[in-house]
Image (cartoon, rainbow, N blue to C red):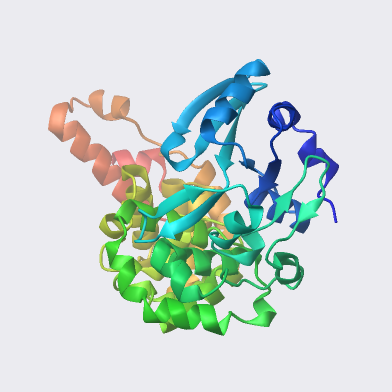
Length: 378
């Protein structure tokens, strides 16, 4: 089996692979780029695994006129810049001792040892420079069946890094067959070690949760996550019951909108959302649980977020009216018919002018955007 040729034709990739081969070393594509290429999914980052030690990677890159950057040399990773693009090259490794994120590893020359320390079998796939796929652990069968399984014993893989609990649900949502169900051994191991989620930084949890919520349909994975007791440590107070309806009403892969459906005690704090994300989350929740008309939501939030808020309202409370789409468009194109200049011409200034504009917006909203300029100036 071979991966698609267009992946191998990316600028800079072959020069990096050739530089390592010229030094007498193996160079293999590994992980997500191989998995996604075989699935026909978009390939973003390309990772390369090699039997060359970091110092040899640097020497090979320099000999080929490429730029090596020791971005993670203590972990065996050198970033080689070729054709203006970064390529992460990591030496084969084997675990000596594992204790969370700070595992003690030794460099290896055996691809099977390197594969054994990866998280899931579908991520333990490699490809030669000609595209030939190498499968040290039988991951191809799992990938073909869209079956997500941990490498080796699930408990061991989770103890190496508790973030793998969240990755288990995220990868299930993105790559597993929803009809096939979730792997029972992996689910049981995640449930048994769910307390380990509390040891993770909130930034890491937030990044992983947003990736999970960006799947085409994250609802089944979130439901399993809640039942296994893994959602509460990640996002206290979250409730996934409205998520299937929101996905049905709004197919947009919008993690903040979907987060608004989950709720939670304090998602801004618990997921370390940015200020912009926090503002948008609050606006969507307020709009979904309020009574503003579709036109007013379109004017205040814009077409995209107004439609999202109405979908969220439908998932949480009630269905939107039949003419919601047209009304959103009317509101999104509308402009408040009065301005600060109108009130300044009437002698208002400072706080009084600001209050007059605020009152005008409230009256215009209450009229469902039908009040005229004269109505608002009266």
